[in-house]
Image 1 (cartoon, one colour):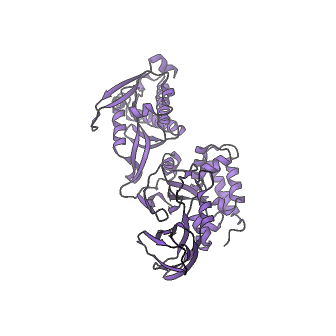
Image 2 (cartoon, helix red, strand yellow):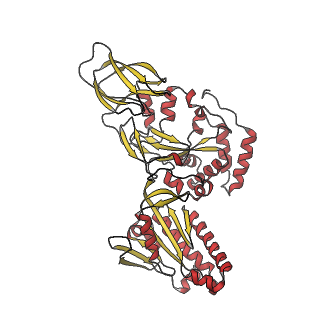
Image 3 (spheres, rainbow, N blue to C red):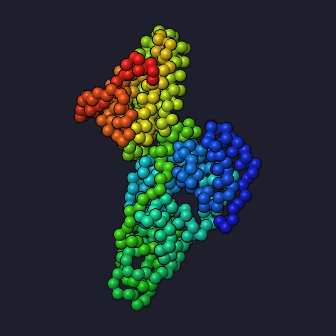
Length: 486
């Protein structure tokens, strides 16, 4: 199969799945139509690993809604999800998976000869590829691609940019001296002309990685250099003279590989990346947690998150409430309160991680989002209490941000670590209608304007399980009249 023409879509299947997508939730005007047009008319490359942020920007659509669009479209079978481990130094797609459960803690870039720790908020990217049932594209058949297309379109990301805005992969492709396939259990001879500098001879799959310093007088005869492909082949540093070089690439593996010879800049530029959907952003989308409940983390140590905000809530006096109005009535009220908190959490870009009795644990991308949600949760529950003094629900809320580990607990995605523990302890300080914030949360961008009209008191307290005293900020309960107007 070639990438020269646009393949027809499966009309019946496309219509059926688009109809289901239309019903999934309310969408902005023409958003689903724009997706349909893309599926029908875009070239193959534009339907391979779609960056939802780029799709949103090019169509002037809200990013959060476009993420939901692709998640629902994936759940309906229009797309497959791609989890990519991207090297921050050279934009190589070091590994790619079709499921979160295959993502692991560490990865190694054979081009940069660098090890990286996988972090959900950094270079774990999530993209979407059209389903082969809906429309067959060349990238569904990577074994049929040319070696150059495979290396530079499959094993690289176009989102890594040079300082002038050029995709780094474009510069890599233009400067590559050789790109070829290496058949299994065979030797492939590759001849190139090398100038002074540093040259890389490597496999994107990690089977070989050699950095050559090319220096000195020009060689009078061709230099013969062996390169071994092996599953555990260690990186090497060697020296060559300028001139003609012949690489004898011995593939000892049972599968075909790729081999690239390319110069490495003396001063490797620091890349900037177009916004892309990170693992953290995806795990903080309620639609992902609702639609992909079977997606779990299998990495034994979990996967780190550098910065995430936790919000914990609890109800004051819920035991007395059950005694006062009976189990059925109290349970109904508590469920209604969960629905309110869920709706507010989603509106501010967060996700409910779990409920624990009458309590809620939620995550947000930014402290300001969590604080805004906390204020609205408190106001919404207060408003729902009007006219039912004997059935009053009273929230206690705490917010804290920091690093955490994403893990699987009880077959569901969850978070673990001291940040989670502190967030729960901060919530435990709150009394009726109070919101407690950790110091870093209070100082975070965008929080001060949210608190400008609220009474806030600073305290230094000892939290159980935390060695040092912590400064916390109490957003006091609004006075009764203000609460009634909220």
